[in-house]
Amino acid sequence: MTRGFAAFVAHPDDDAFGITGTVALHADDPEFRFTLVLATSGEAGMISDPSLATRATLGAVREQEDRDAWSAVGRPPDRHEFLRYPDGGLEGVPFEEIVERFAGILRDERPEVVATFGPEGVTGHIDHVTVGRAASEAFDRVRAEGGSALLRLLHQCIPQSRLTRFNDALVAEGAQPMARTQPVHGRGVDDALVAVVVDTAPVWRTKLAALLDHRTQANDVRQIPEELRQEFLSLEAYVQAWPEREPNAPLLRDVFEGLDRVG
Image 1 (cartoon, helix red, strand yellow):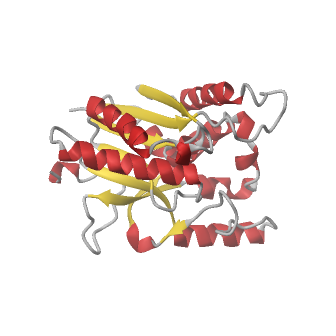
Image 2 (cartoon, rainbow, N blue to C red):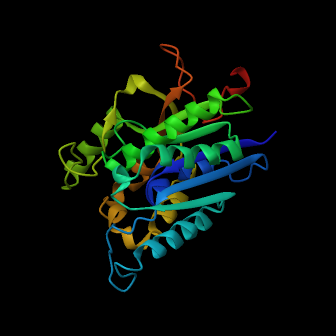
């Protein structure tokens, strides 16, 4: 039985931060099928070194960085879609158009698990929020049509307790903490909402390698003190958006855990 996992993100490197460890832990599973959809090519992002890209070439460069990062993981997506909507401009794209693009992929793939952003968008970036809304709507729409799979919808998140610990550690190292008042800084969610916590410590170096392959954006990860990188990269967490989680249900340790009891 194929175990399908589909992720919908906004920019190249969103996937590296959010789901690399989850995928890497399934790299040797012959039943695992991985679909990755990126709404934009990140052409409005930073250029950490002018020798790497120009403003005109950055989108194409970042697409290749994303492919290279998954090669570093050793488990490239079975389906890797770049929809090439405008970076920073997803709010200006008709929402129904995005939903139907996403829904068409879900109809094709019928994955068991879909992951995307929640209402806080992990960092508050409006493209993240828009992708999360659209992917969640697409999931609900296709599930309501009937058919196979679409058993679980997950929203990537940072548990608030973890964000607090990490910020305290940043301050102790003399670095600036992440703050909700700053753009594209981490937004925590109430720990009580977290349903899935994946221990990615066994593959944290793989995740770091993938992040560093996003060379035009590498300043993001290089700003994390080396002493804290393992801590930062050793966990991936998700809110379960569907089905509704029972109060006080035990934490799941894998995105597929318990699905033989669902549906």
